Length: 177
Image (tube, rainbow, N blue to C red; front, side, top):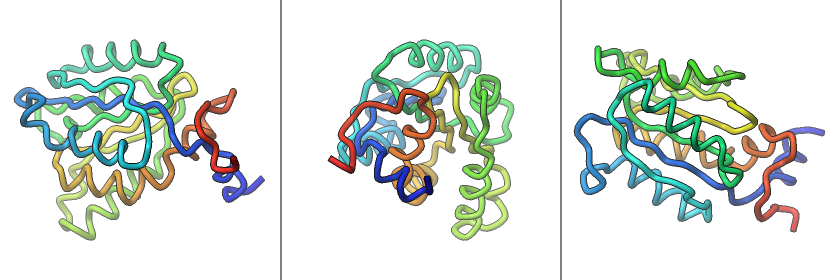
């Protein structure tokens, strides 16, 4: 079965977790997390959980692991902490959990980012993969990076990713219904 057939069988709507990794943001100032939530809701996806955590790899990994236990969760989206400063440690938290990596996500994100911001795009450690048959995606915390990742990469493939990751195929409204 090709990617078109997979997409036709993919759910239109999936359960999502949105996590912002930041030492300074609050719900009121978390523009990137709020953008993720709005874009997901506009396309009918369910928000199972939203939260802001300090950029602490142990706490981030712990929250992700706890959300993986929820059968309603198909996708976990994390924004922030993907740079190279001393405090940027989200990549380590997420990468340490991934059982299957999707290197193409980071490669495509950095390419698209390069087209917008130039060589600074190489500083991003955006990554994606699967953990326990769930999709986990980590992107930079700037609103422009979140918009780019969501609109160009994540949203067009979200149902397809969830469908392909799950051995039981995710529940939700199927495109074929």
